[in-house]
Image (cartoon, rainbow, N blue to C red; front, side, top):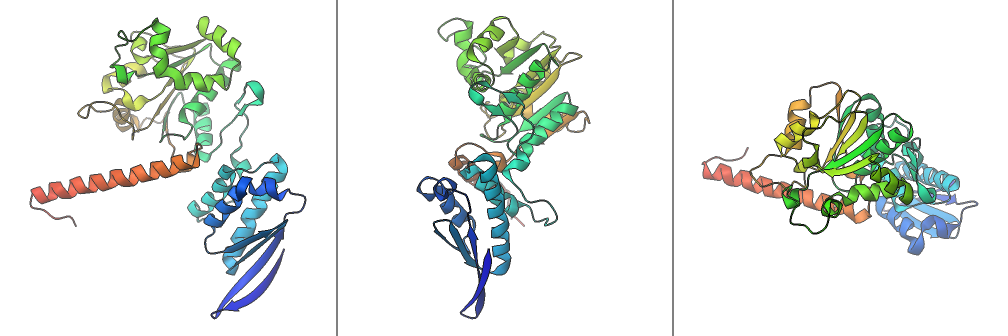
Length: 352
């Protein structure tokens, strides 16, 4: 690496050249330079040029130093894992923008690669991939009830299922119970065609999808057949005591307050409960309060109940998902502000 100074309109600019030694530029920058273009967007005040293995950047000194640190992290990651994704770049760059504490260690994709939770079929390795997913894993070790709250794509359900499979494989529990409210059918599954399994499968498909990544298909079928893994709608939990089990309540935002109370009071002496939900996707009637919202209000002061809140930085689906979530959040906030202003106006008041 080397610096060269130039003066443009009385502004001193620095130039640095980084050589990607031993790295295939095509693989590093991605198909159609998708990784390079993302990096340019992440550092809009730098002029970035790539020629072969040489990466040149021009800008002010402080910005270039930050850029160099990020490139070093990314090249080290590529050398270790022989791949670099858009998600890796976003993780490294975004952490810098969110973290103004310069004494903290820089973010790297490897920082978040905790110990594997599950080794699935076809070489799949399931592990916490973001900071808050890692918090979920650590919280589950020390708390018997864990709430994981966050928007779509943050890995709430996937991480919870991985924790359950790990606990079962380590013989910490004897069975896994996965449940969720079938809100769209009003908990009344009778009009759907087929037997019980066919009736409830559409509502529980996301849980099956997660299990498919972690347990071979034949073994999973046997575990479900013999009740080692049970997947059922929430209505089927009433009257039971769930013991020696890892129990996951998914889509908890669609429970009523009575359903939430019913579920939480099913807990046996040696059970572990994980409740996941997204308060931005409540499908209950408008006048009916979400059981998840109520539980978060009344249970927040119990020390042995942990609440982990995942956010946009934990989204690991397609890059557009994060932008979609942001757009909806902005629109919803505008609607709330408009309603607030309307209410004030109707009462002859003005906002301060």
